Length: 330
Image 1 (tube, rainbow, N blue to C red):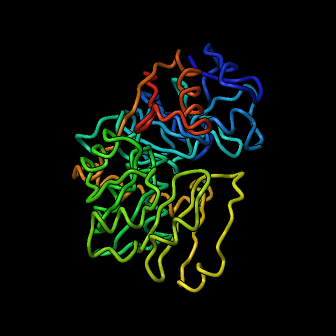
Image 2 (image 1 turned 90 degrees about the horizontal axis):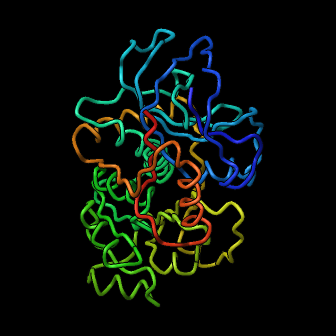
Image 3 (image 1 turned 180 degrees about the vertical axis):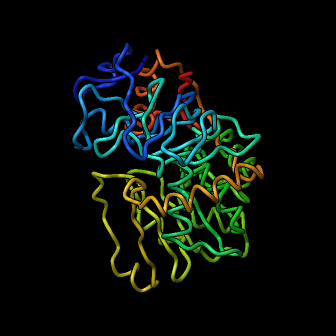
């Protein structure tokens, strides 16, 4: 089969594209013919050795996939369209390949009317957003959520899911185009994250604004003084980025406000927790409440370019990507 792979951890340029043996599914696995994969920051960290994990050699990166079941251990029928995530991690092979052997606990049916591209684009970011909103922050209808960086892969997903949960959504983004994209996805208010005083800017947009119940942080270097200035009493802060970040933390103002801090990584969630998220995601995909935002599409032969673009935006702050990078495999 054709696959993108590395012989050992290294830069994006170390990705090769060539023939590898077809995977052999074990008990409880399904063999999936991959049509689309997606690129996430964690894919580049593992591929580059920034996050150390035991890797097969050669190693195929990629967490997300959509495709068609070739053979199943019993949970799916041949020909059924499925999506999933959580591959390419903890010793598992990834999804930048024509065929993938995937544990059926990590696979979910694609609803009728939903494209494979959308299912792959919304996989990891969808499960991540659901875990953060529902399991961690316990967002309730009628609350206000602020997502700092609302036009990216996770941010644009949080906007849509928070709206589906009944929240009022405020998004920040760096350009007029990106702010309009947030509004198009359902944000009630979109403001420039570069303003000197975000709390004042929000008060100007929403005269009754007294703080967000939930602040979702997508950037690698949180500014906790800024966060607290916009957070309501007993507000919740969700963190899901910035492995090496060591920001200053205003302990006094934080505890006096009764705030709470929630950090998590998606791939440590149990299969049961991820399936609960997937069931909601499928319902929202089918209803149109969740429309995964694709920023750029590559072919499998362009896998190194796709990883390079992700790194430029995640690590270097290039600002050239709004939405998910997807890779058309089949």
